[in-house]
Image 1 (cartoon, rainbow, N blue to C red):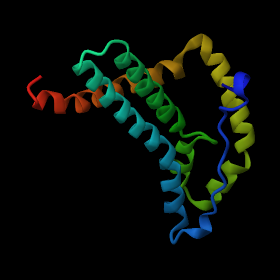
Image 2 (cartoon, rainbow, N blue to C red):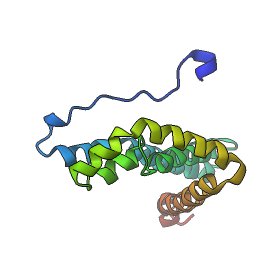
Image 3 (cartoon, rainbow, N blue to C red):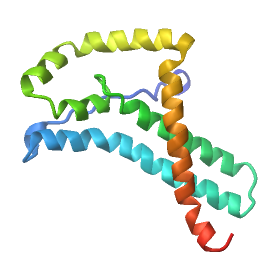
Image 4 (cartoon, helix red, strand yellow):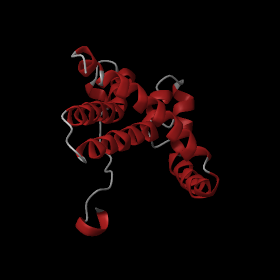
Length: 155
């Protein structure tokens, strides 16, 4: 998408914590919003997969299963508790402020180190295999939940 249309990268959204009554809790909710949207999309896609499978429509169940899988991959990846991912925003909300600001001071360097780790992980596969295991279990759980309406109908 980036090469073809010049669009598709993540753009950070500026959030002003002063608008919340409880700024730390408000920022945790903001950090949860993206991954939860991915999980919700995964539920909808998994349900559509089950629906098209129920009606015997070929090819479409695989498309929606793939959408569910990719959405869960994005959600799990974004919950890594290392800056700049949302998982770090959630984890750091529970840290004392002096530690939080100390870690955020090095966010740029942590991100460079994380990118180097991902490059080396492409050969080893520890991070990608762990994420894939988590996503596989979550996808199985979501599949079991979304098939319930069809099982209740006696199918």
